[in-house]
Length: 272
Image 1 (cartoon, rainbow, N blue to C red):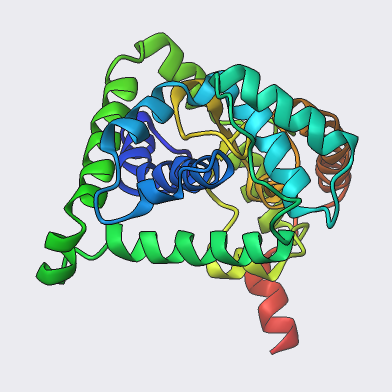
Image 2 (cartoon, rainbow, N blue to C red):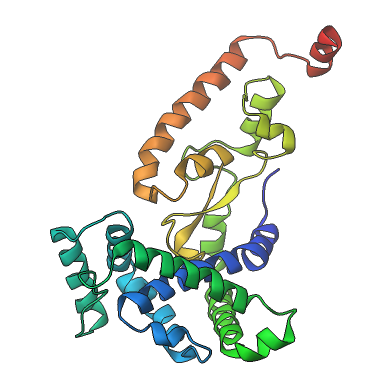
């Protein structure tokens, strides 16, 4: 089933808005820890600090991600860590050291960071608990402010750009929904997940998996490409993989064209 513009925008505002917020929030928490501002995560978290981070997100996102990966995939300090630290310091204009890893064990930092992520997610989503909500009112304000920024970005998108995003083909392998249906009808789809309905609509994917669900970072992808891309590959990297997947689809579609279509009802009758 092809996704239309209305359905696409409903998914963006009902599903992806929250995912987008938590992408930014997790990196915001990491940024506060890394820059020695953990105290900002108390009951009176600085809303302006978060809003400034959102506005500057694109400016230093790549450098922050490099630093994040270095910290979470390493057990010691090396030149890559120092380079990543210096890049961040230059971009965000801070003069103090980022995470004093010589004085802290990295694993202790990781554990504390993960605890804070979970703790603050609870605070933000605690709308059903008045006592928690009132105690951490600023955390709700973070979400409210982000929702306004997010909505504004999508409200300002032109119809031309919107229709370039909402196409009937996968951005990576170029397969269309009609071709997926044809493959399914002829038993050329092997995953059992199609039995549960996944695969018959295109899915919203972030070109940069650590970026936001904003107009410049989203495309429509088939289930197979979206599943394979995960949060590891960016758009450029996965495009080449998508070309290989496209060749597989072409081969299967060609095979269907060279043989008689299989009637699924007859096949069921034969094996029941």
